Image (cartoon, rainbow, N blue to C red; front, side, top):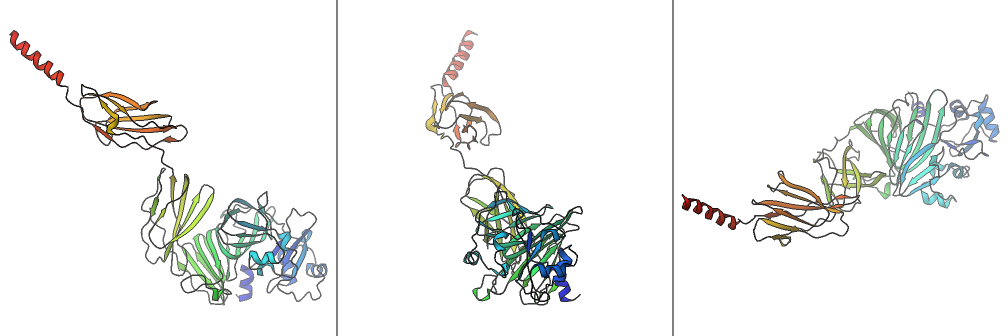
Length: 487
């Protein structure tokens, strides 16, 4: 198979469409790319008879047989084989800049995919907007994440998480009614996406991510794709290599077809493998991904700060990456070289960590997840020997502890053993005091109850050794002597 044909299979056309909300603009905006012709554009996307002739006339092309990359073509909706279908933002967090296609389409004769950054878009007269109120993303729209992230769902159930510092164009979102065919092409200019493609609904569909260094095309899988402008030998950004793009793709489930590098080599990447493709260099063979982390513990329903998570060392790992999520989505990504990390400042709530090892070429390994729930300890009562008032008999005591203003009550436990396995008293009280009699040593602890919040940790344990009741001993001895005397 020739290079041009392989590229045609994996690369798809750069279509940029007006939002369907723009009822007056009944056209798709198509940006010409390398090796495009009116014939292959029409064959792929247009049902209009004699399209290759009419499309040249419609756009008033002086030389229809010589299309220039970056040239904008307008294609009437009524000519198209499949209409665009919007994607949906499930959640977004932090800084997300939204540039609708209807704005980008005003940049006639300029290839929008070559506008490098948010700043250069602004210099071109395009101001980013907040995400639309209906959270819909249409064909041709562009999202640029600063410190934010977003989860996008496509019409077939495929989900894509856009990680921080990413720049992505939704170049094609289309379907064919009645046969469940979905065709999605995304241009990832920078950053990383984590993708979960629906294996049941994607059997006849295409999902492709195009980067400057290569293309990943799939039918039913879970995989990551990332691209950076350039790196040095330590896999760090290198200002001297800003024109050299590097793509990485790691396959977690299924199979991904990747084409890229100087030789446009096409390779199928199986689950558990990944590839690093550098623009202008031959594509290397796939590499086996590092195994999943093995956590030292799997977390619990109640954790306190500071919280340290730890895992077993993985040979060949250059460092480890931890993604911290709350119930709304990704909070932060942390890179650590050791096999532990301490969280010192988090709000109460439920969290999960997805961690992975990263190898020497920057490929990220298999994911491992650990959940936990943080809570701020409620104020516990103070119970000391000063709060233990023993009666003259030595076997009866009044027990008291600090009264806490916002506590709704108290919970006292008295046991024979220090581990409180054998409870003598297990009682809820309204007041911070309790009376108890005992002839044997006991252990006492108290916790505070808070309405709607639960119960505090127990107080420190108070050990009480009752004094012998000598009066009873004297009476006993006297009674024995009296009995003897009467005999």
